[in-house]
Length: 208
Image 1: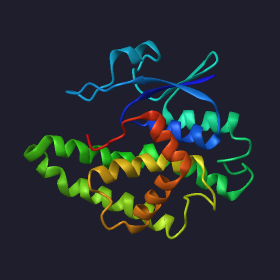
Image 2 (image 1 turned 90 degrees about the vertical axis):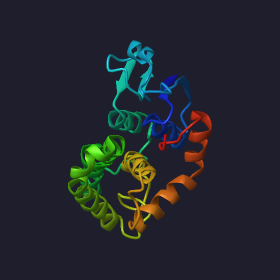
Image 3 (image 1 turned 135 degrees about the vertical axis):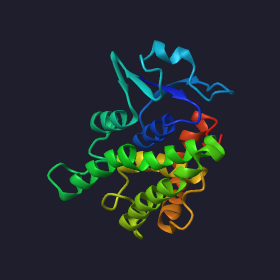
Image 4 (image 1 turned 45 degrees about the vertical axis):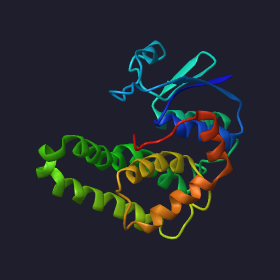
């Protein structure tokens, strides 16, 4: 049985969504952020030394880092779904977006979050960070165009990775003007498996 060590308002929500899309049985061990610091509880360190979520246990295997978890679950349980064949051009695009989500897209989002918390002290950084937001989200908006998915014509692991980045960006008001991304995010939220993941995972509000 797969166990998802799930922290509210975190990246682990996309793992629940993925498992719902895969139709794989799983159980959840829930953790709550500290209401003052928003940090994960110390008890998560009993599962993995970093004390971060998501972490998945599958038999005697423990897998951390959401990108690694997405790849592991798709390769083991995907049954030729959610990942292009490695001999196709789409596979290179898949690799790009899988790694771009955390390697590039999340950086301007996190910097924007820190700016909010810094208040006036962060004002000198605004132009540079706004430039990065325009660069990266403009890139994603144009690359997506009018398509429904980032890779080919079907849902893939890249969509699970990118959706969280876009949700975090939306919570900070960063998606204004990026109509393709707003449309895409709405489509992902309409998926029955996404909704089932929310129902099982509980509170999911990145604005807090």
